[in-house]
Image (tube, rainbow, N blue to C red; front, side, top):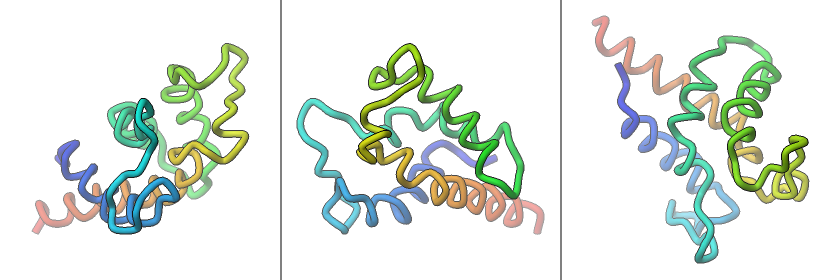
Length: 115
């Protein structure tokens, strides 16, 4: 079974270096007082991604909205989110790649334990 730290390491390697809120070397440059949604909500993200298997991103996004956005302090009770609407939420911005990284990490781990 893949640990949360293994998932986080994979995400930092593939997402954080691309993130508009970073320095292109994987270090976060989010303003003081704000936290990275990817890091803050990693357990819920893993739960959302691991609850779906689809060739379409839509079911993953549905679970993201339910398990993460529904509890995020940036979201309003009606489900709208200023950060998401302004493309300021890194989690939403990179979500298709996040799903890919998490599933590849899980598959890689499964293949390494099967051999």
